Structure formats: structure tokens, C-alpha cells
Image (cartoon, rainbow, N blue to C red):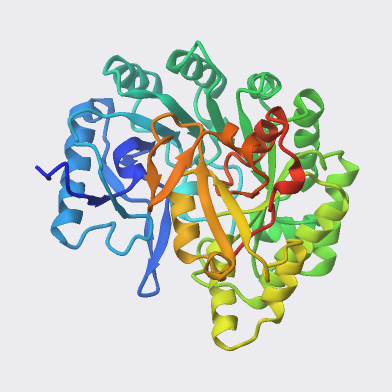
Length: 442
């Protein structure tokens, strides 16, 4: 047992996440590179039937990995940038804050940036309803739990509508929780529409193209217009909760493709949605052409008065690597141009508050070029998690979001998953959106 007074190495996923894959459980969905080799999607254990899945078996496997990490033994998490030292809880009882249901690799697409792990056609080795009931009876779910539905294609999960409704309501019937559905939107779900309409779910759909030809090349099938039609149908009904994703690859970063994608979004009345700009997670590094394309898409969407546009956790660090490289070569043209886009005068002291005191914020502080500039100062974090408020993250205080009303500091949202939700909370607190540095990618 580790000394509670001593900080140990771990991560949020190891302590608080479970990913239900078709034939195994996983700790996380993070991917990282070690010596040029992609790592991640760390396995807990294989699963042949629901009998294999118990609180004790999960707890034992997590504890074993945690101990290996802290003994310095080679393990599946070796080299992971998401590990950090903190006062982590003992593995006496599970407290799951992230449950990801991706218990099928059956998919109606075959994206060229994906892998057999996600479209290999595996069906679940266990009954999802029985597994959930077993875990529910063990009382392992935190009050703060978020649920993700992926795959494969989640809408192809057997009895998806029934399971989605029952699991969501059983896990926390008294208050809204975050249900994040990652669907290609080829199939439509009335149940999902209802949850979107009530603000109890988000839907993320990756389109990655503006023309049917490129869509088929990247996604492996035709059907781009069907995807746009279904997204319009969801959006017309709910008018919120929809995130449209564009993953840049070698096939889709051209100006005409980007423009046609934006034209389609406008023609289908989707510009009130959130837009997530990403890169291929199979690529350790990206080219300057992809970076320029990502910024071009961002600017074009902003010029269409789109409120919610963000670079995700795949793209941000890759852009940051290019910026660091350019700075070492004394090539600051790209950096200076971007700082101008932020509308900041960094020759003077720039006071910043980060919204979100989690692992993403920690990595931003550690790695991002912007925070190494001499006049940029992080005053504190804000977070709604009462367990974090009043504590410190890397020596910086964590406060309640209401504290933002006491000053006029600039605000950076450190978490992309809850971007739109945080924007709405700022509105409810009457905090001016002009304070938000929304396009920071350093």
C-alpha cells in the first residue's frame, strides 16, 4: 500500500473509468506515441461472458496496473503523457465517473483513419443489460458519472433505444447527466432525438468531407447527404447538443473541400451546431498544410457567425509541436499572426483564468507555448466540481465559476467536450463572451 501522504503516479481514467468493448474491458480511449509506435486503449482484461465482469475483477486489475506504474515496471501505460503525480485514492472501492459503452465493432462505415478494433464486426460477448444491472447493484457509479456511447456504430447495438433509455434513467433518474453519443448518423433514433431535445445528450458526428467523392474515399461508403439530412432532422427537433466533427486527413484538407463542407452545413441549417476540428489520431505528427487548413476552416466558420468552434485534444498538441519547432527556429510569423487573432496585447500583463481543472488543463499549462510567454499569467482555475474547489492544481488555486464575476480576466476553456455547455454557463452568470479566448491552440 502506498503512503497517502506521498504523491503517486496515475490518471483519472485508471481510477474512475471503464470502457465496455465487445470482448474486453478497457481503462481508457487515450492514444499516445512512444518511440514512434502508437499506444493506448489500455486493456483491463478480456471478457468471454458477463460472468467475467465484476467489481472485484475490475478493481484488482486496476490496482495491479497502478502498482506496476509506481514500481517503475514496464506496462501498457509506460510513456503515457496523461499520467501525473497526485494524492490518488486507494483501490478499496470503485467510483466510476466515466462509463463508455462501445460493446460492438459492427459499423456501417469503414473509415480509412479507423481500425479493425472499431469496425471489425464483433458483437458483444455479454448481455449489456445484465452487466449494467450487476454493476449498478455493486453501487460503483459516481453521482458525477458521464456516459459515452460509441463503437462501432452505437445505434447498431442490439436494442440500442431500449438500453439507452433504461441505462441512462437508472444510473441517475433525479438529475440530468451527460450522455455523449458518437454516431455516424446514417441511422436515425427517435429516442436520441428526445434526449437531445431535453438537453440530456450530445451527439457527435464526424463528416470529414464536403463532397460525396471524398466522403466515400475517407468513410468507405456513400451516404454523405443522408448524414446531413439526419443531422438536420435532429437539429430541427432539438436545436442544441449536436457537434459536427471534421478530421483532417491527406484527402480532405484542400480549400474547395473545406468550402463545400461549410456550404453543406449552411444549406442544411447546421451553423448553430458546435464544430470540432481534429486530425487523424493515427498520425504522430501533422504537416503545416493541415495546420493551415484547420485554421482556414476555423476562420471561415467564425465568419459565418458560428458560435462554437474548437480544436480537439488530438489536434491541439500537434499544432503546439509545430509552434515550438518554429519558435526554436526563430520563425515567429505564424505565432504572431495567431496572437493577433486572439486580439491580445501580450506586451502587457495578460491575466488568464482556465475553466476546467482536469487533466487537459494540466497538460495545457505544461506544454502550451502561450503560457510560456513572459507576460501571460494564470491567476486561477474555475471548476464546478465541489471536490476540486478550494484545492490547488499544480500550485494554482481552484475556485467556483462565480468568482469570475469579481474580475475581468480573460477566460480559456480547457476542456473541449463540455465547450458549449460552459459557454451557456457563462451566459447564465452574465459573463461577457468578449472575455473568452476561444481559439487558443498553443
